[in-house]
Length: 630
Image: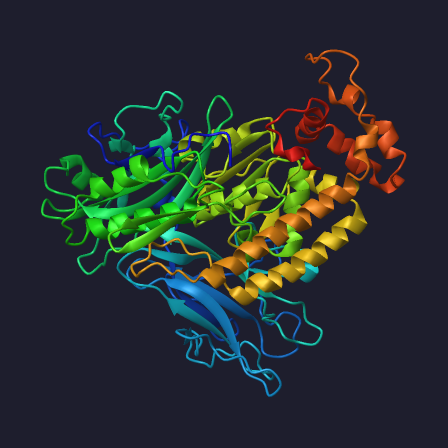
């Protein structure tokens, strides 16, 4: 871990509603759009309709067609029983539906309803809502969230028929149960989309309320855009029902690159506070259409900005600091902040673990496990906890071929975690193009750039804005990729070498099983109990991290076998022209030693920036290049 100042953290910030109160504009061309209010009302009820006898109740929307225009009949092709359709209604006067499942029983494979679910037992006309008349009884089940407060609720439903060429829509999850169980009938699957559902709110531009230190470091100027990365959707002023409870604080991360190409990392804990009367402006109450006596709440966050991605340690520190701020505490919070930023030493090979106490809790900053690979503190196991191996392999292939990639998730911290892990497993290559793993709404026009990029956005973004046609969208919540036409053509016509790819796929399947056995989970709410310190559990995850990186490295080493024999000797001093990859690397000689079927992939690879830099680093050796191990 070299190349940056030996400070654990560079800046501590408090970000929220500042003195220059101004409405938040997500994009210059969409001033009136607010992602927190643009989402549809949540779905509060699902009904079964037997079309032969019943009609949808008032206020319900019946799913008549599939996305491909086919009749959305759950009894399609059956000789008896008539058409069966699903209908749903939206609203905010009832607890929203947060989960949906299918309950069926059979002597061979009982499938009880999930814990906490209620069964849609009767149709709108009072008949048993069995979706499989004459066969195994099959019912829809639902789980509800809380009526007053914040929910991740179901906001869209659709039915698809894969047998007729239909795919799961982007951003939707599919229930893996065929709702049309006839012997000769087409399979029908239910898909749903979830979104964050908030109380009535308005958004304002985030500002730095306070900071430490007050002056910028000469070697690390504080970027002006940091507040937008801390609160990407702006500062939310909300009116809650008096029966609502405070939502848990949430943790998120971001990364940004300065003009010198240096990556900076941010760790954020966001929370709500009740606004005082002096903070509330009259236009806020008018916009929310509430009485002068109404209580309003506002989002605020605390942030650590550093050259080093000690995300787990920063999360523990900020979580503890927040808990102390809402507790009886005799020691000023500033003392804990100063201790971290001014007194705590940086971990070294001689002193790999640095312990820091905040309140009665111990925070540990440590160097990662030592391996021949470059040091990394990223959690690579999150790749297999989030993405299934085939999806991860497709994503990795697209990155090597330098395609435009957009990562989406309803969990902001997941975006940076996955983005950093994806960049890390590219080793010995390095991503050379635009990289914004957690992109504020104000910067989302980068998705129109004509160059390759990795950009992460909130999953609600594409509920409001159109997806660019030349961009691949990876939904981390559903482990699905929506390919652009170019990317689909590349994966078909220029596939990666098949034998090494099969080996990598087998390795990832075994590692995915190990991750599933440990069941680490990826939660981003701030803990309200003491932080777990199970060292053996942490060691197991660290070992899996190393295995994942080694699996990708073996794949890259295999496909680049004997590449050094094709490096051309340097005949002149380094110059702009002499750094041309075609002059440094004999492409034709390399191709002559591999199967012809692999030529399309390698010819595309030779034109990428990551391969050009790879060759240049090995032709012009420099002391800081840890990637020269391969």
